[in-house]
Each structure stands twice: as structure tokens, then as C-alpha cells.
Length: 483
Picture (cartoon, rainbow, N blue to C red):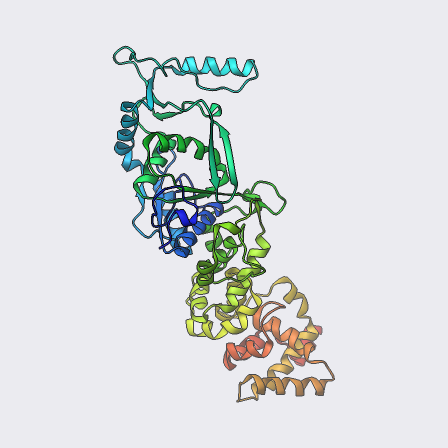
């Protein structure tokens, strides 16, 4: 198993690689979070290590059971469930408070009795003087305690000299002057831990060796290192990955397609292997390879090839990639997925037989379901506007002729049907397309479909003839209409 040192870790001893994905359950699993989970999963798999999941549910007002369920559901769908049962951060509050007390006892933290009003006044003064606001508490070096019953927080005693350096596996060497790091809060006045403390304690207790996350957390890393060094705990290797932007270069938002993972599955009809492959290529690459299997991703993935610039999300590229995976997908699996979307009593065997000719024309499950509806919708299919316009009186009369010729056929194979219609087209002095166009409209209700002979075979002789008859007009019909 690879060691933390061999993969950029800062610990002196060799440790098995452990990564974690730690979402806050205040909403759906968004696309950026899914990519972070993917990179953590791949890094652990590549190094023969362990990938863990932690639900950071300390924000009790905003964390919901529905969001937790959506996160688990999205991760399982992508094949990114944790290697062990998830850790829930709120359940570890007592452990966090224990470590805060340990830092207090060792002199690395102190009780601060500054009131919210005092802090607000100092912040306002800093703004008025146009200088950065830094906590400069008189309680930092005061050995006395406030009056009994007076609320206080526990603050870290941050170093004020020198600098803190991170050799980030993506960003490179990043240094911050310690004067920029103020004495942030570890434990609130109600005894609950802050995010900074909880993350450090949980990562340590979960034996995390590599913290791979969005670069919006880079500033947090410098504060978390203050806690780690005060405790003398091993430091993880950090890899802060640039965020995802929209195709226009702006911060990714819903207008770019920044939906929950469940929306890509349920609303957009994306396959999990396609989203997996697409997220992999958002910020990481392996030469010119575009189609990368899960096995190849595990073999090839490394942090060194994660780019320093934001990647750009492009929904059209995702859909094109999804089209590839649809064509590669098992027909029985696709039939089940389409059946869930159509909502009729579906002949799964018929759907499965149709998949080879249907899936080549679709880029997502929605298009596949739309293309399949003509097969299983009860009765003659409704005509869309283009099909309705196509079926003129002349075209309907032609359908009557086609019906008469096809009704005489017993063999109902693609080859036999093609030969029959070609022969009829020659007799009528028409191109084959002139017959195929009204025939397609009558059979499917649309002007686009799989090959017309495939459609006839899939529908079968009886259903095909019934649908043609429903739209056909004989010469006698037309004469009576004129009268």
C-alpha cells in the first residue's frame, strides 16, 4: 500500500492512504461535490487505500434528512459510496469539546469573554479606518477568568510570527503570514464546536492522510494547521482542486446546468458511467483520451495531472458523451430504464429488441423513451404537427395503396418488406422515400424514426397494417369527400 510520504504527505511515518468526502447536508449533492468525491475515491483506489464518507451535519438548522438521503443516493448511483459506514459529525460533538479542553489545558487556547457587541464595535472601527479586522483579544494573555456564569468562547492561540506554508499537491507552495491568521473560535459559548475544530478532529480520528477538496477551502487549511500543530498530530497532504465554472467562464450556477446529481439522472436521463467519465475529465486528463473506463481511471489517476485553472462545465459535451455510453449499454438494462420513464404497461422483450435501432439515435434516456413510445402507446400514435402536415390527401391515398400491397405479404422480414416497397415505388414511378415518409408518419406519429423497415418489423404485421389503415384513404374515400 502506498504511503502518505510517497504521495505527498507531510507525516514523518508511512501511513496507508485514506481519503474522505465530507459534504454538508444542506442541499442536494451538486456537480462540484460529486467531482470532489470522485477524485477522492480514485486517489484511494489508485493507491490501494481507503475512501471514507463524513456527513458534516453540525449546522442543525439547515441540515435535513432529505439532503442526507439525496447525498447517499447520488453517491451510490455513481458508484462512490464510502468503504465504511458514514461518520456523522454532529454525533461527535463531545469528542470535539474534549479536544478544545485539551488545547485549553495545554495553553494553546484560551477563554475569551469578548461580547458580540464589543466585537461588532471593533469590526466597525476597522471598517471606518479601512484596515483588515483581526481579533486582538485582551483575554489572550490574561490568566484571570471572567465572573462566574459569564459566557465565553474558546479561541486558539494562533502564532503571530513567521509564516505557515502548505506544499499543496495541486496549487504548489502556498505561504501565508501568521499575522494574517487571527485567534479564531474553537468552541462556541453554547459548547458546540466550530467547523475548523470539528474537521481537524474528525480527519485525525478517521486517519485521513490526504485532504482533496475544492480550492475555496485553501484558506481554511492554514487555520486547521494551527490546530494540528498545537496538538502535535500528523498533518495530511492537501490537494485543493480549482472549482468548476460554466462554459462562459463564470462561476458555475444553475443556469449553466449546476443541478443536483439526481437531476442529471432523473430529469436529463444521463447514465452514471457517462457522468463519471465526464466529471473525471473536468480538471484532469490523460493525454488525449476522452472515453475512460472506471478501471482505466483507477489505473491512471494521479493528483499531478489535476490542472490549476478552473474547468468549464459544458452540458452539450456531457450529452454527447452520454450518447456514446448509451450505444455501448446493455439493451436489457436500457429497456428497464426506458420502461420506468414511459409509464405504460410495457412489453420489455419488445423494448429490448428495439434498443439496437433506437439507441443509435438518442443522446439521453429521455430521447430514447420518446423514440420508443410509438412501439407501446395504445392505439394509433397521435400525429405531431410535422407528421400531420405531411399526411395530405395524396399521401393518405398512397398509404391506401401501400396497405393493399403489404396486406398481401405473409413474410414480414426487413428484407422482404424492403423488396416489396421498392417494387411498388418503381411501379408508381416514385422514389422509395416518397413511400417511406407517409408510412413513417402513420406508424410512429413522427417524421423521424429508426429505419422504416425496422419499424415495420418491430411493430409486427398486424399492428403495422392497423396503423396504416387508420391513416389511409382509398380512391373511393377521396371521391366521396369531394362530393
